[in-house]
Image (cartoon, rainbow, N blue to C red; front, side, top):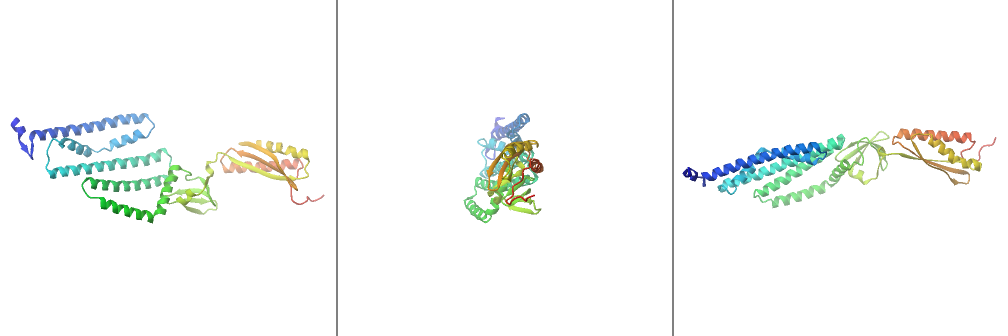
Length: 347
């Protein structure tokens, strides 16, 4: 038996080959068992928690391929046990490097896919936002692929200095040529992640007023109150002051009017209380103040301020209209005339 174990093949004894085979089998089986146990335990833990980190780890463990375990097992088994021919060793090294890079690519792609799915399910992204995120995920995959290719070539002994320099110069030239497009792309990502507005919001940007219809990789489309569609570059949009009316919690209303200067002082003193009574009859309302704010050459100026406790525009306008009508009726019943810059007609 010892004689058989002492036989040599390809420069190694049978005993060395058997030891290597045993190490390979043990390493592969051990790694597969670790993957199974970790995936099972992490899955159980992820089901009990609301965080996304453990879900991502479960996904990455499940994406660990069998052939990657085989390559790692071979590397562990043969290193220092079996003396390989330089050509075979080179092939094994190349397989290990390529396998490692492919597995990293699979993990990274899985992480990107997990991020897109998590955004769609948990962030409530609309269709355009999800499309924008998927667009950036595609760009991320391209950048990751280019990086892994360069790293793989470097680990395989290929001189990549010239290639990297060429790619750097090319990248700078492309970036300078499309810097406005890149600015809009990153502005789109900022809009999607920061959400200053979403589709369906009514916004005001400079002189444009309208409802957001679409958020793309380069432009945002707004349907104006006049009916036409206004297309705004994302970068220009974020440089402007955006007023989002859909996110109003309440609307402030200030009613200013003037009555005739010859109004009796006692009646003039009662008008703020009348205004408060009129406003507080409406719902939902929060009264703020009512005052005689100015005595002019030909008028007395009053101001009443209140808040409509609803963001709905129609509710706001209906309450404002009713308050205005009630004010007119009350002034008429009190025989208080609205002021005009001209004398009231006699008779």
